[in-house]
Length: 265
Length: 230
Ligand SMILES: Nc1ncnc2c1ncn2[C@@H]1O[C@H](COP(=O)(O)OP(=O)(O)O)[C@@H](O)[C@H]1O
Ligand SMILES: [Mg+2]
Image 1 (tube, each protein chain N blue to C red):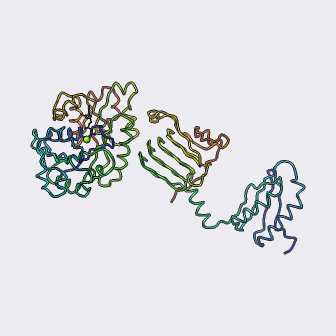
Image 2: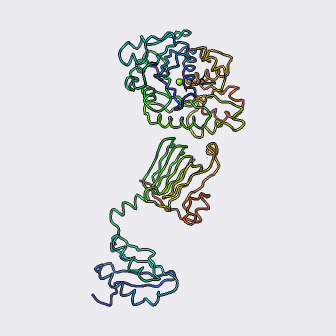
Image 3: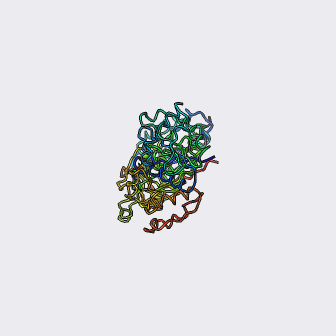
């Protein structure tokens, strides 16, 4: 029996889809059987980031409505046999699937996969309800901006009410060190002070991330990028390893004191 | 009724008058004698500064309307004002209200954005109130943590004597009784950890909510003694 992890944030555009794609990829690289689930019905793009758009035949709504079997809707990754994706529908809206139906699908996937990574849409409405319905764990993504942290806080509050989900863990994405130093961005410790949950990792803002997404190749596959290293570390922490912070993460020195928060559990 | 046992006994004190009332006789007889005694002695308080009066009714229960009547009778003499009417007896409803008013509810959690935590009586929050979160109490709010959201004290009964205390006082808004105040901090300043152990209270002379160091405020006002729920 595998475990399901929802990747969520409240705010849009902070990197949920990028994070889902890369976590899925690094777990597959580590030899795990992984299924990515795109719950952003109507605005799907996990398939594009994974470069799998042209392989989609059925989607999640088709499964919910009984038009096909779950296994028929799964799209196999072109690089890893152990990586699959359940795409969202593009033509309907979020109300086309109910949380119970979502949970049923995720439970079914957990029987076949080690990890089910659920990419959540923005917002706190039905799409969020659908995405968390079958989750055992949650990862909250934020950027170092007030509005993003505020929404992450709101989402953490909602996640804490979901009794079946373990305490959420945090990824701070798109960190720009020069802005932090100049005081134009929230510091990591300020974010941690407010959100007060375990830190799973930090990812620098890196143009390679955007370029990779455009090519349909998650950045984690590119061993030379700093962001890739960050995602690999996050993957290992999800697997339960205690991974110290790497050099670029240490550059500013600000992470030293969070060492104890990382990779616990 | 024998005249030797007075129903109302007047005692002069340095800080005013004390009226001790018989607790067994009929209430009407008490009012009659009160009026009579006050009239007889009226030359003492015809002029000069205000004299404050404490009424002690012992084991007699005094209803709201009787309370107002007593106040009206005493006030009708120009230089008398009622400071308090004390009775040893209260209704179970009054007792319940008092119990709630003095109750302290300890809660350990983080009040996150979009969440509202409200209690009757006094709140002891062990944890933070994040921006976008709200705590409210009909009495006082004590926060062992950072207040970065909204806090309301004296929320239901317009109790403007209530206070808000926080280990780190960085609120976006404070409400005490009917008063509201905003802070003019930049959103990013809210996240700093200065303003340690401060207390907000309503200052009627300024018609404003004032924030000061708790130690300073304690010199000016008495915080009530509170009882945690068993
Ligand atoms: N670490 C990063 N560095 C640079 N660009 C990033 C990073 N993470 C995400 N992005 C870019 O930000 C945009 C939004 O990311 P996305 O994952 O689609 O967000 P969400 O799913 O939360 O809406 C995309 O263009 C993505 O390539
Ligand atoms: Mg997305």
